[in-house]
Structure formats: C-alpha cells, structure tokens
Image 1 (cartoon, rainbow, N blue to C red):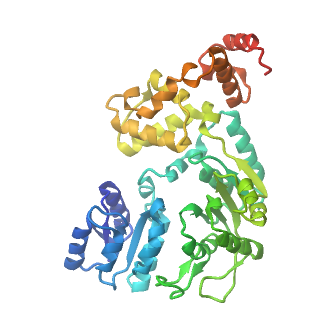
Image 2 (cartoon, rainbow, N blue to C red):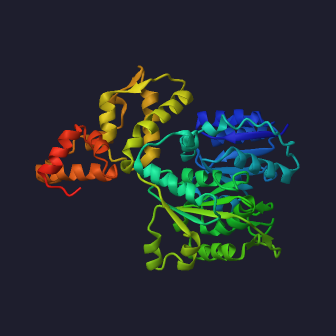
Image 3 (cartoon, rainbow, N blue to C red):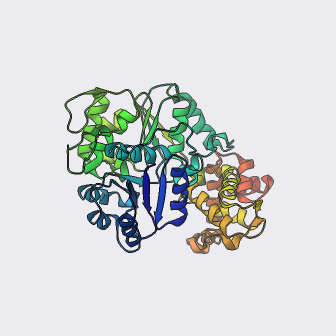
Length: 453
C-alpha cells in the first residue's frame, strides 16, 4: 500500500483529505509543520509527499530543496499563490494542484506521480468522493443540489430560459457576471442539459494560471519538454474531449495565450508541448468573465477574433441584489448545507437578520451569502440565527439614510422605489415586499412622485 505524507497546517482539511485517501487504498501520515514533515521523511518510508505551499515554519519550496529527490512531491497552492508553482516545479516538484481541487483531480495527480515511480495502486470504482467534496469553503460548494432549487425571481427565470435555449446546441457561450454570482454553476447547468452531459466537464481557472504554464494546462506536455516536466501531462482540451471545457475568467489570459487558444479553437487540433503529433479534439467551449471584454478588445488587451469565437451566445448571470426574491431560497439551502457540515440543527433566521439580509448590498454575491451563513451557523448556539453573529460590515447598509447619501428625503425615497421596481422587473407586489410596505402604500408613493412606471 503506497504511503503518502500530507504536510498541511489546516488540520481539519488534512484529516478530511486523509480519510478520503484512506478509502482509496493509500496509507496516509500527517504533519502540520515543515520540521515535523522532514522528520517523518527521515523516519518512514514515504512514497509521495503532498505539501501545502505555505507552512508555519517554512514553505513548500524550502522543503523541496531538502527532500530526497526520489520521492515525488505534489505542491498544494491557493489561487493567489499559483505563480510560485512555476518555481516549485523548477525546484523539482512533480506537479501542483490549486485549492480547491476536485476529488478526481487530486486522485489523478497522485496516481500519475506514483505511476511514474511505479507505485500506483489499482483504481477503485467505489471511491467515496462525496465526503471529500465537502472540504473547505469554495465555490464548488455552490454546486451541491443547486439545480434542484426552485428560484422565483424574474431574473432567474430569464436566465433559465436562455440556458434551456442554448444547452442543446454546440454554440460557444460567454457567461458574464460578478464574482460569486454563480457563473460556473451556470456553465455546469448548460453542460448537464446538453447532448454532451455524459462526457467530461473540465473547468480551468484562467486567472490562476501563470502564462508560462498556460500552454501546458491547455494542451499538455511530454516528459522533459521543459524544466520541471518530469512526466507526460494531459491538457484540459484532451481531458474534456467529447465534453465541455469551461474557461473561467478568460479575460485574464495573456495575449500570447490568447493566440494559442484561438488556434486550437480554429483548427480543433492540439499538440502537447514537446510533441509533433496532432491530436483531434471535440470540445464545447463555455467561458466566463467578470470583466468587460468588449472594452478589453477596444483597448487592445483582448483579441477581437477570439472574442467572437467565444461569444456565439452570451448569458448575463444576475447579481444577488438583482434577484432578492431568491434570497430566502438560497439562505435556507445554505442553512441546510451548513447544518449538515457542522453538525448543527439550526431552524431559522430571526426577523432582524432577514431585514439585514434584504438591506445588504452583497458585493460577494451568492458565495458571500453562503460563507456568511456558514459562519453564523458555527457561532450560533440556539435554534435561530441572530444578528449578533453576523459580520459587522453587514450593518452599515441597514442604517443607510438620506442624510448619509447627501440626498433629500424625497429623492432618497424615489431612488429606493425605483431600485426595488428594477430589481423585481417592475412587479409592484414584489417591490412592495422588498420595501417592507403594502402594495397600496407603494402605489400611493408612485403616484405622489409621478413616477412613470
């Protein structure tokens, strides 16, 4: 049984990863510091090392320089640290994985490393990946049962209509939306409703890829094709062959990487780095951005021909403030998930919490709502979430007044009414609920201000 050493100072994450790997035929040792990890390496026969890039006493790169070169090392990085993975591979790391990673991704990377060393176990078709999917607070959590929810806002209804329209086609889709709004969930919904649904869905965060590694991530490479390429690597195009390739934050690609991507989309053929063999690929491209790509094209930062290749059909994912009718649906959903993950049985939110939720501007969108509820569940001891367990920044919007905005009270009220009407697609009953007034009162204020709605 191959023995893996995990060096990770996040104890809960390390233990969850240990249980997951145990179920898949590995013996796992844990260390929370680089010093203890080095000691474990000297005292035990280790077949593979999984180390976090940031440790309390040193970093993964320092560990690499003092580790037996015969032991493959996989570096775990956060998105903001992926640039350092280039240096890690130059120092001898076998590969790196970006947190949050999927069960299949970490298993494939481990098996690839052990195959290179001749230690790979037989694959297990009964892998229990469900528990592992619960690790960490990542955007992947938004996927859980998400499509079973019945949203009621007009913005969500419009989005679902567009998804139903474009899913059966093979058109390239550009998804536009703010960070945390659910762009990847939308992409998966398109894939799951398409004729490619039984084929792979591969997500690639273009904002997390150093430009030096982008071609390798796209197309793969052969062993020895560049410093750090210690084995053959399959790229995302090959991995998604027959299915869907999701390019998240595609606007962050360098100009050179844009050229490489465009060529692959035009020719539907790719070459691994270091290889002369062309590989035919059949992938549907769904991309996402929170930037204005049209402006990037005008500024010369994004290729116009690539923009049109990616944008055969565009979808706008609404921000949470534009679909507040869905707030209660999402809140109870995340309450249920958080109860399950944290072993709690909290039943509801207080009236004051609902008022704060509805007044808040949600800059982090659905992902922020999820994180706030998970934190609140952790801090709550009773059966109901109260306002004292909410982050302090949530209270400022609830105290917004005409004085604080330098507006007259009349202008402030008109602005609030128009904002509520816009959010509800001018449904006056729903707007009244958002404003916490009766429908009759809303009609009276609209008439009073002579609003043309």
